[in-house]
Image 1: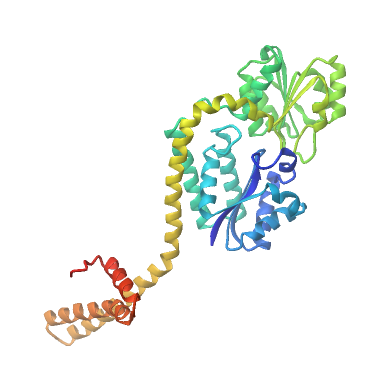
Image 2: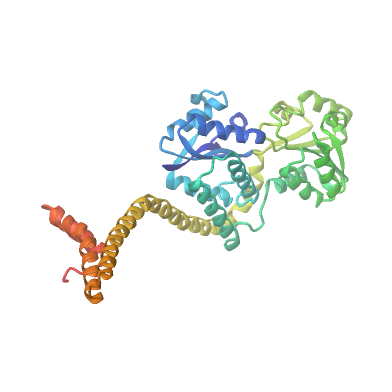
Length: 417
């Protein structure tokens, strides 16, 4: 059984493709159960974020995973295959380590991906699709991510998605403290964005969410107010900045809603940041003159200036990851020898028990203990040496030298002995 990683991300696929294959959080368990049921996949986890959708799985037939991926989303494989990548064993392990460490993120070193991966693992555990191999993989993954973040500067001066949203808004408005901010959704990303915008002390801050409890808790935390999601259309005109990130499969903020808001605002500019995949804000909104609409793909622009300063940390982090990949692959390879080691020990123990039983019988009838122990040691030595001696004697031609070298290595012998 081999490990594989399959998926697409912001490097390989545009947002329009990524949003078609995103997994809704509430359906992840169902998807995992379906994957291991209908395909020859032993273990699996799914990571689905705004920037990537990836399957991590263990199987002997990886070609079936891409078929399932396309079938599950009702998309012809030929339409998404140009954007897909598949990493086998070593490359898969390295990829998972890099993703968790923030080295494969749109915002280099951003910490949010580690929490998202931990959520993916937790959901796979709850779905019963993690076995010993992938459980160990993710244990090592989180350990590597911690080492990278604690021993390199990869996490220094992080420009997160949330910070990028603030930066983009600051390009349009001279002072964010004079602006009213509306957050649509109440998940982790919105919480991070609210924390970043809250630090700028905006004029007013509002959380709109389908369920009120979460929205009210966030609003109270950041000194804002909470409203229902169905009220967004009525109040949109009152806000200068709108940040949306929900799990809705369809847009929440449509073109007509924004047009009405702009008319009521007398065409004062609005910044709209859509962090959701699939999108919460209709793409056509970007064509309006007084709206500055940014998607997750646009946020990459704000981090370019910080990349050079972090390149030394990247090199150091890659070195750590390469070493840890070697260690994990060694652990995987050693698992293949476990049955042989177990069988060898069981065989040796049977030989030992047979000689011990014989010695006990001799002692019970009164034989000299010294002679019994001598016979026991000789008998055990002969039986243990029988197989390697026969192995050497049966070797022929060129194999004889190879067999002799193997036995010498096995028993730590010197050729002149």
